[in-house]
Image (cartoon, rainbow, N blue to C red; front, side, top):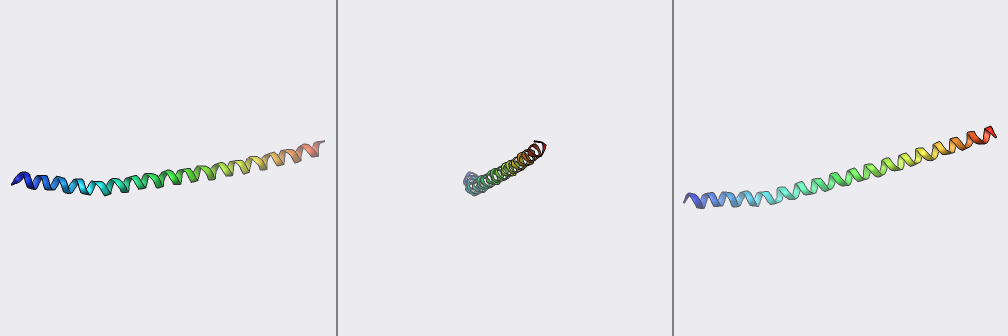
Length: 65
């Protein structure tokens, strides 16, 4: 009798573990997606800053000429 109840408890735990693992997996995917978006946004901002710096440098070079 004790084994049946123990086995049933284990089965319940295993069944509960599956949705929990799916939630964790989805959370990891969301986190990775947000990190990728943040990295892309940072790269775009860096590129914009670089282009602005090049433009300012070109202006100063033209003034010196």
